Amino acid sequence: MEKGVDAESKSKSESEPEPEAGRKGVERFSISVEPELVREFDGVVERLGQNRSKAIQQAMRLFLSEHYWARAEGECAGAVVVVYDHSVRLAEDELTDLQHGFRDAINSVLHIHVDDRNCLEIIAVRGRIERVKGLIEALEKGKGVKQIKHTIVSIK
Ligand code: NI
Image (tube, rainbow, N blue to C red; front, top):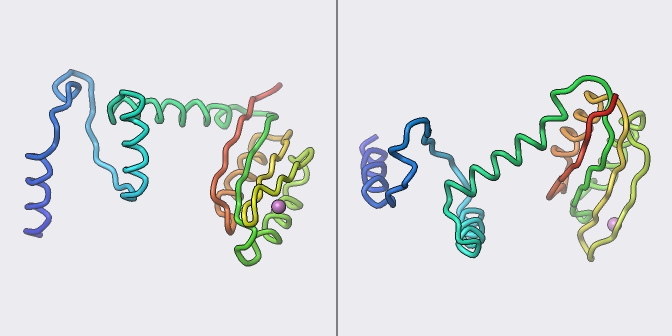
Protein backbone atom coordinates (compact mmCIF):
# COMPACT_ATOMS: atom_id res chain seq x y z
CA MET A 1 0.00 0.00 0.00
CA GLU A 2 2.75 2.38 1.08
CA LYS A 3 4.74 1.48 -2.00
CA GLY A 4 1.84 2.53 -4.20
CA VAL A 5 1.52 5.89 -2.44
CA ASP A 6 5.25 6.55 -2.90
CA ALA A 7 5.10 5.68 -6.56
CA GLU A 8 2.15 7.99 -7.08
CA SER A 9 3.67 11.01 -5.33
CA LYS A 10 6.95 10.44 -7.20
CA SER A 11 5.28 10.32 -10.59
CA LYS A 12 3.26 13.44 -9.77
CA SER A 13 6.32 15.48 -8.86
CA GLU A 14 8.16 14.27 -11.97
CA SER A 15 5.34 14.70 -14.43
CA GLU A 16 5.52 17.61 -16.85
CA PRO A 17 2.98 20.36 -16.41
CA GLU A 18 0.34 19.98 -19.09
CA PRO A 19 -1.26 23.13 -20.48
CA GLU A 20 -4.68 21.44 -20.63
CA ALA A 21 -4.67 20.47 -16.97
CA GLY A 22 -6.16 23.68 -15.60
CA ARG A 23 -8.57 24.26 -18.45
CA LYS A 24 -12.26 23.84 -17.74
CA GLY A 25 -13.84 20.80 -19.33
CA VAL A 26 -10.68 18.74 -19.57
CA GLU A 27 -10.61 15.37 -17.88
CA ARG A 28 -7.45 13.59 -16.81
CA PHE A 29 -7.16 9.84 -16.55
CA SER A 30 -4.42 7.27 -16.21
CA ILE A 31 -4.00 4.15 -18.31
CA SER A 32 -1.76 1.08 -18.22
CA VAL A 33 0.31 0.50 -21.36
CA GLU A 34 3.13 -1.87 -22.31
CA PRO A 35 6.47 0.01 -22.04
CA GLU A 36 7.49 -0.93 -25.59
CA LEU A 37 4.26 0.56 -26.97
CA VAL A 38 4.81 3.76 -24.97
CA ARG A 39 8.35 4.12 -26.37
CA GLU A 40 7.14 3.63 -29.93
CA PHE A 41 4.23 6.00 -29.38
CA ASP A 42 6.42 8.70 -27.82
CA GLY A 43 8.86 8.39 -30.73
CA VAL A 44 6.16 9.11 -33.30
CA VAL A 45 4.65 11.88 -31.15
CA GLU A 46 8.07 13.56 -30.97
CA ARG A 47 8.71 13.22 -34.71
CA LEU A 48 5.34 14.84 -35.39
CA GLY A 49 6.08 17.63 -32.93
CA GLN A 50 2.93 16.84 -30.96
CA ASN A 51 2.36 16.01 -27.33
CA ARG A 52 0.93 12.86 -25.74
CA SER A 53 -2.42 14.42 -24.84
CA LYS A 54 -3.07 15.66 -28.37
CA ALA A 55 -2.02 12.36 -29.93
CA ILE A 56 -4.21 10.34 -27.55
CA GLN A 57 -7.15 12.63 -28.34
CA GLN A 58 -6.59 12.05 -32.07
CA ALA A 59 -6.43 8.30 -31.49
CA MET A 60 -9.66 8.42 -29.46
CA ARG A 61 -11.48 10.35 -32.21
CA LEU A 62 -10.24 7.87 -34.81
CA PHE A 63 -11.39 5.00 -32.61
CA LEU A 64 -14.85 6.56 -32.30
CA SER A 65 -15.19 7.25 -36.04
CA GLU A 66 -14.14 3.68 -36.78
CA HIS A 67 -16.94 2.40 -34.59
CA TYR A 68 -19.77 4.74 -35.62
CA TRP A 69 -21.00 2.44 -38.39
CA ALA A 70 -21.49 -0.28 -35.80
CA ARG A 71 -24.16 1.81 -34.03
CA ALA A 72 -26.32 1.96 -37.15
CA GLU A 73 -28.94 -0.62 -38.06
CA GLY A 74 -29.35 -2.63 -41.22
CA GLU A 75 -26.63 -3.48 -43.69
CA CYS A 76 -23.02 -2.48 -44.18
CA ALA A 77 -20.20 -3.09 -46.63
CA GLY A 78 -16.44 -2.64 -46.60
CA ALA A 79 -13.13 -4.33 -46.04
CA VAL A 80 -11.47 -5.94 -43.06
CA VAL A 81 -7.68 -6.32 -43.18
CA VAL A 82 -6.16 -8.96 -40.93
CA VAL A 83 -2.46 -9.63 -40.37
CA TYR A 84 -1.65 -12.93 -38.69
CA ASP A 85 1.26 -15.24 -38.03
CA HIS A 86 0.53 -18.50 -39.83
CA SER A 87 3.29 -20.32 -37.94
CA VAL A 88 1.15 -20.13 -34.80
CA ARG A 89 -0.36 -23.58 -34.35
CA LEU A 90 -3.88 -23.86 -35.79
CA ALA A 91 -4.03 -20.15 -36.64
CA GLU A 92 -4.82 -20.77 -40.31
CA ASP A 93 -7.35 -23.57 -39.62
CA GLU A 94 -9.12 -21.46 -37.02
CA LEU A 95 -9.35 -18.40 -39.30
CA THR A 96 -10.72 -20.52 -42.15
CA ASP A 97 -13.34 -22.17 -39.91
CA LEU A 98 -14.29 -18.77 -38.54
CA GLN A 99 -14.75 -17.28 -42.01
CA HIS A 100 -16.90 -20.21 -43.11
CA GLY A 101 -19.10 -19.46 -40.13
CA PHE A 102 -19.58 -15.89 -41.39
CA ARG A 103 -19.97 -16.69 -45.12
CA ASP A 104 -23.29 -14.79 -45.16
CA ALA A 105 -21.31 -11.57 -44.52
CA ILE A 106 -18.14 -12.33 -46.53
CA ASN A 107 -18.04 -11.62 -50.27
CA SER A 108 -14.47 -12.60 -51.03
CA VAL A 109 -11.03 -12.87 -49.47
CA LEU A 110 -7.67 -11.87 -50.88
CA HIS A 111 -4.72 -13.62 -49.25
CA ILE A 112 -1.20 -12.17 -49.40
CA HIS A 113 1.85 -14.11 -48.12
CA VAL A 114 3.73 -11.15 -46.62
CA ASP A 115 6.88 -12.99 -45.49
CA ASP A 116 7.90 -16.40 -44.11
CA ARG A 117 5.59 -16.07 -41.12
CA ASN A 118 3.03 -13.38 -41.77
CA CYS A 119 -0.07 -13.43 -43.93
CA LEU A 120 -2.40 -10.57 -44.73
CA GLU A 121 -6.01 -11.08 -45.70
CA ILE A 122 -8.35 -8.49 -47.14
CA ILE A 123 -11.85 -9.68 -46.38
CA ALA A 124 -14.54 -7.95 -48.43
CA VAL A 125 -17.70 -7.84 -46.36
CA ARG A 126 -21.31 -7.06 -47.05
CA GLY A 127 -24.16 -8.03 -44.81
CA ARG A 128 -26.09 -7.33 -41.63
CA ILE A 129 -24.22 -4.96 -39.34
CA GLU A 130 -24.44 -7.32 -36.38
CA ARG A 131 -22.91 -10.14 -38.46
CA VAL A 132 -19.98 -8.00 -39.64
CA LYS A 133 -19.46 -6.85 -36.04
CA GLY A 134 -19.50 -10.48 -34.95
CA LEU A 135 -16.91 -11.36 -37.59
CA ILE A 136 -14.53 -8.57 -36.50
CA GLU A 137 -14.90 -9.48 -32.82
CA ALA A 138 -14.19 -13.12 -33.59
CA LEU A 139 -11.15 -12.21 -35.72
CA GLU A 140 -9.77 -10.09 -32.86
CA LYS A 141 -9.72 -13.20 -30.66
CA GLY A 142 -8.18 -15.36 -33.41
CA LYS A 143 -4.96 -17.31 -32.81
CA GLY A 144 -1.88 -15.60 -34.24
CA VAL A 145 -3.79 -12.45 -35.18
CA LYS A 146 -1.49 -9.41 -34.90
CA GLN A 147 -3.44 -6.57 -36.40
CA ILE A 148 -6.94 -5.85 -37.67
CA LYS A 149 -8.11 -2.76 -39.50
CA HIS A 150 -11.42 -2.12 -41.13
CA THR A 151 -13.19 0.41 -43.27
CA ILE A 152 -16.91 -0.16 -43.13
CA VAL A 153 -19.81 2.00 -44.23
CA SER A 154 -23.44 1.52 -43.36
CA ILE A 155 -25.77 1.12 -46.35
CA LYS A 156 -29.51 1.11 -46.64
NI1 NI B 1 -0.05 -16.79 -46.42
